[in-house]
Image (cartoon, rainbow, N blue to C red; front, side):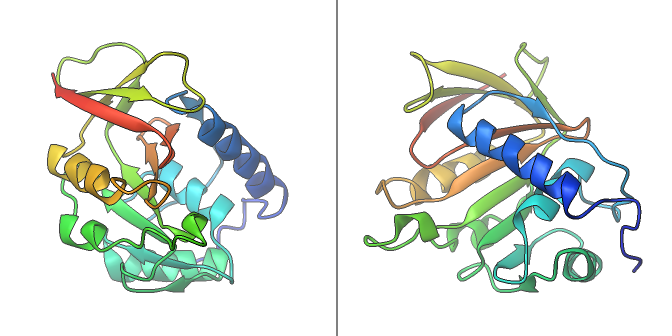
Length: 200
């Protein structure tokens, strides 16, 4: 596995980290991540860029997609450590065919440290502000959202959404969710935000 030599791990990761912070502050707002990288099969390039922005030697990740190849890819490029889903800081999931058992074990933090809950990074086909022919409509409400915010997601399992809702039932404990698509789009749903969904 070759290190991403065209990617500036200092400058670009900081730029993408700031963009993700903005997305967390504005739930449901769709932004774009892009860089010249060559990601192994099975993972959205956007999810890899999220990993580059957030992973480092102090955190752990659980990759449920193409496990051995992507574990090596993230280790080489971020120095983060692979871990089981019940202790991992970040969990990478295929939205269409998720390992819901592993997501259901994601850590939700402790009462004294609710921010220590896991981040769930979900690969999907498409994220849009406009209705799609098929997929799911997500209706968000809570901090950072005026009234409600609707986003449309193609290629996400409703079973996965149910697991995330269950993990977030005891706010401020819970998981933070980052959704990425194949076209570079990314949006965030912090654990502080509630959402409902409707199949299209």
